[in-house]
Amino acid sequence: MPVVTINGTAKEYEKGTSFETIAKEYQSQYSSRIAAVIYNGKIRELMKSVKKDGELSFITYADNIGHKTMRRTAIMILIKAIHDVVGKEAMSRTKVEFAIGNGIYCTIRETSVTKDMVRKIADRFTEIVVEGIPITKKVYPLDEAIDIFKKQGMEDKVALLRYRRSSEINIYRLDDICDYFYGYMLPNTSYIEKVQIEKYHDGILITLPTKANPERLIVSEPREKLFKTMMLSSDWGSMMGIENVGDLNNMACEGRMNEMILVQEALQESRIADIARKIFKKVDVKFVMIAGPSSSGKTSFANRLSIQLRTYGLTPHPISLDNYFVNREDTPLNPDGSYNFECLEALDVEQFNKDMTRLLAGERVEMPEFNFISGKREMNGEFLQLGKNDVLVIEGIHGLNEKMSYALPAESKFKIYISALTTLSLDNHNRIATTDGRLLRRIVRDARTRGASAKKTISMWASVRAGEEANIFPFQEEADEMFNSAQIYELAVIKPFAEPLLFNIQKGEPEYYEAKRLLKFLDYFVTVDSSMLPKNSLCREFIGGSCFKV
Image (cartoon, rainbow, N blue to C red; front, side, top):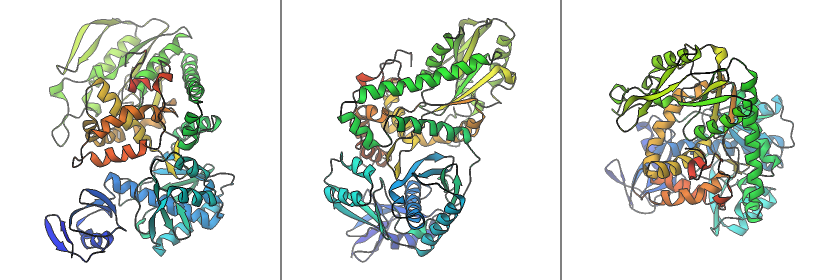
């Protein structure tokens, strides 16, 4: 019998014993539900079984991979519930659009979604969970898989699979429906224990536990500004004929990318111009506060906004909140002893407010500059005095937090939230997480500008995300305007820059599984030549070649 080593203890199991059976033995030792295992260095789903000796560890809902596995499985159950309630043809028309807070927004195209319909879908979802229906996986030749999806009317999957290099593909089955999902799945429907399904705008919002609180359902506060921003970008994609990666790949292979890129850039520029116009119309505005998470393109956006502000006769002056960092020795520490540069206390808030108040009063102020090498704030003779048409364009992660600018009158501030809010999908049932786009941006930028490896960037990502959750996302709805910096073509452009960096992460390193996942994800895209990008493109902040100092 195969010998399985778990937590240093070896135990014999019958050949063919499922990993789910083993997980049940050890579940009591874990506070979160076990979702998958790592067996001999490879991630395995619980429906798989032991075939030879090996070392095993568990992945739970509190882990990134496990949490995504849970959410992915819930989406398949939701699609099955829609299939059963609305009808078979509704499955192919169901689109998993994007995340809103802790929920995922879905639509059913060509269908009027009502509260009664959603209630029935929610009831059917609960029934499917209680039934504990097995989810199985089978490998199909690519041509056969394409035929299956054609018969189900899933042309989005047909378009996606057209560009697959592999000759085989995994298809999951839940009762009478078949589907393709990018990533791992749970062994049966009973694993989805906490969920809320409700009507939201013209679609359905399904809310699930977060990775930070996998055993508790936390429903987010309404995020209407974020929703409208996401829908605007989704509408832009529809207008350009690109709703999924298959559409994007078709355009690339047909030689139509140059025109599409120019249209995308024009749409973004028109949005920036619209924000500039609104700032100009608010005559008392002296402080344009820009905040957003890591790799959202804040610097390029601030530069492009400044140019648009000049067209209204305003004179913008860029200020980075980073220049108000406290000296390194005064920086708060994380529990592990590392510096916490993300918290508000890492900035000299009092000095910032003193300087800004003096500027607002018309005084001449010497502006600080933070020396990141010495870890000290310096005064280098840079003076600033605001005239009638001058505005400060202030960029930093705490820009939307009132505690950052407590001394400044509300009417003097115009707040902008910026993020890369990806609305492009792999196909109708596989959305692209906005965090994946930002992580790939950061990997490429950090390697280019800081000499940092992809391994280092990935290892820091959880800490960066925790800082965003605490210091940025809670204030996003307080912004006067939101700007989506994601570009529908950018992942196809970033691909050749990111792949070599990810391939450098070796098997056995903690970041290997994330690197492997991102490489598999990028494999869906046909590469697009970056030379087609304008010099002021936001994407160039990450790949290089920008006309701005970024």
